[in-house]
Length: 307
Image 1 (cartoon, one colour):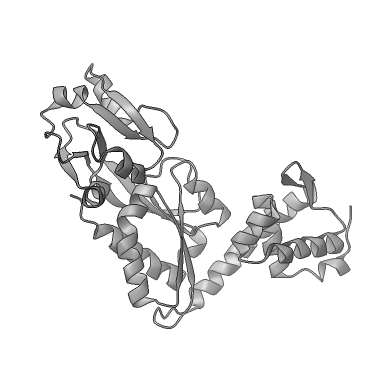
Image 2: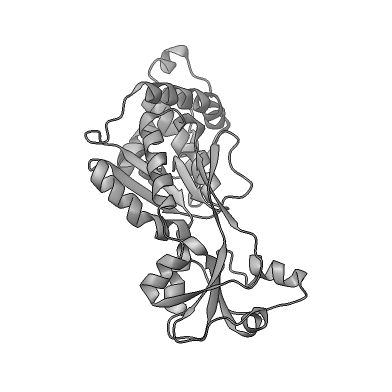
């Protein structure tokens, strides 16, 4: 399909922004959620884009929309310019937390979210009552994609390779490992006792091996992981009243221990610390509101009592 320069005159930034969201999300539902618009509005926008450009742009394929070559080309060309414009405008706008209304979007690992949110929400309710907070829980596999798509502007937690090349990063905490157990169970008596006890493992990928097992293997030792759970909050259901133990980063241990009447012991295995990194989109680097928010995130995480 071809389109004329006259048709191009009907394009505006909102239409191009919607096209980027539609192509990246492949769904009017999730694109609408990302744009904070009604689905009907986004569907109407797609119809207008099709009329202006003389191309289907996105074609239904099963449950997803597949972009046409023209849609992919337009997004590739326009997205860097849209992000640069947003960054330039954002950097010129002053931010007054007492008066301004903004929506901050952060993605966290579940351990970080559980430990940090009480302090962060208290800061926001005290200092920026008109601002809203959206928290998405993910892990090292999913958070980079959320940053790349713009679904979140900031990520915090254990982040490995795969971050977009344009993001900025800052290490905010190196967390050692400790062992959680029910308070009625005896303290861990050393590595032999540790290996002998049945254990619960937080395993987002659904396997039963982790950092501790890697270190034990180097020592010619092993343990029995009897229970695997997908997130740290589920340890509050698995550990109390049982003989299970679990090895967790120290910053989440204190939080879970207080909620679940659990006890904390030193880990008898020398497991490398967990590096928790703050990552943010390059286009938000100079935005005064986002900079203010990032500092509050760092402060809230720093104030988490480890054990």
